[in-house]
Amino acid sequence: MPNISDPIQIKSMWLQNRLVMAPIVTGLAVDNRVTDANIRWYQAVKGVGLAIVEASAVDPGGMIVPSQFGTWDDSFLPGLTKVAEAIHGNGAKALIQLVHSGGRSWRAEGDATPRMAPSAVRLMPGPLPVEMTDEDIESVIAGFRASAARAKAAGFDGVEIHGAHYYLLSQFMSPLTNHRKDKWGGDVVGRAQPLVDAIRGIRAETGPGFIISCRMHAVELLEGGMSTEDSIAIAKLIKNAGCDIIDASAVGSGSWQGTGDQKSLQTTSVPPPDGEPGIYVPHAARLKECGLPVIAVGRLGQPGAADAALKQGIDMVALARQIIADPQSPAKILGNRPQDIHPCIKCLNCFKTMRTGGIKCPVGV
Image 1: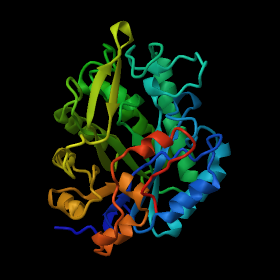
Image 2: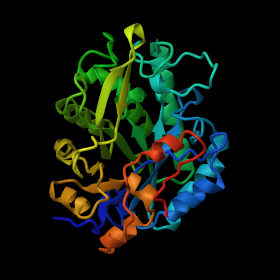
Image 3: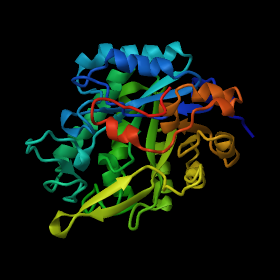
Image 4: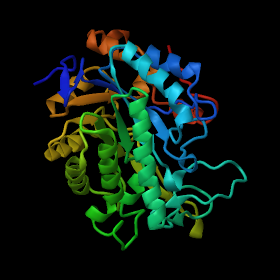
């Protein structure tokens, strides 16, 4: 049974240990470009074997927040190169997460530009999204491919495709938000087709040695959402398409909010308040059926939680909010110094502030 401090090899990439910095949108970018504050953020996190850089938009119309990284043209390359260098300077490998937010895309106040989605299902207050045409879908897939090529040029060891948290590719995979009857909908194979095609395109663009990870749901604690059996089937499909790692997240809760025809599906990846550390781990371990290494997440920065996850068959453990609270958490976990960790207090101030001037934490040290 591996320990959290043991190295792991994925293709030709060696990680010094099994701790992962999860992708955390910081809200510190300016005009979608890397800032000195971003560089300091990544330099401060020491000890992880792998750092996955925050969700970075493949299209200006598909941003989560206005202050996130852009990857849709070559002008972003100098800043992204600095991020990869900062992570490598700490002895870690670096992936960058690529995203299109689809029906959850940010719009400035007064901007009437329609959001695009697989089907006309509202995922936030405002106008219904516009159902995407074949041309729209192919354009987004091409955007993922081109952004991955830029990531490789910037010196990243690979990319992570964001297929979770009810952003665009996740919207396609869920029967709650994909009501299509064409090749992009219907059964699980059709609903996964945009993700599969994006991975195939990236593999063709970047070659066999470049790492491709996919963040997807191991479980959706949401009535009518994607089942774990669907997730296993999708994991097998994307392995065959060229994926190398499954980064297993989840939907911790969700509900339809609003009234009448203004109802929107609101979801969160945050574990339920009464959820134990590792609540998602048993579901993530089931994705091992696809034959790929699996990363788990979900309050795994608490003492003993990381090693407990490995004992359940997980290959790597990702920390998110615990790193925000204490960037030295990975080094303290590896050094068996749990008493020195400044624990996350689960206040979710980080989620609020990433949209309003940059991530802030009352515990932050």
